[in-house]
Length: 153
Image (cartoon, rainbow, N blue to C red; front, side):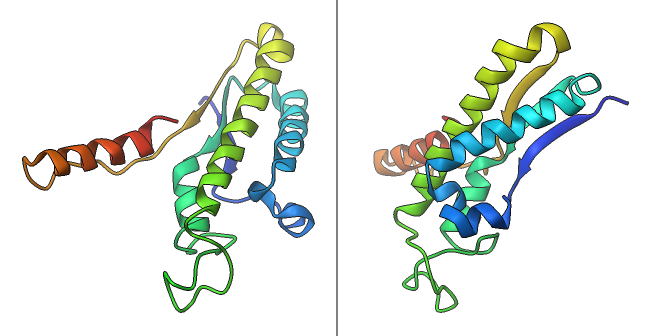
């Protein structure tokens, strides 16, 4: 049995949310790298497969577009149950900060731990497959944009 350790799976500590908004803030990048380092040091002798973030697009969309995952942020124009957030901007900020945090952890692992621990590191992307509604160029282009949005992280 080979463990695959995921550092973030659709959530983050409440303390970071309270302190600065979690993944809404660029401050999360440094904290994520420090958290990753603690994990690499503590478990790297036994873990050979690291996943920095599972489904970053799912976390961004469900946590900050439609508010069904923590922290439950979304725009009130999207749903009457939404009390905070900006569904037009926040998912993009969160996605950006997730990628920066991922990159910081990968850089740290590759420079400081990979040679001695002999592990691998990456992220897991979850997507919905999209096909064009019709053969019109507009529909083909829309399907392409949707795939790019989900896959080109």
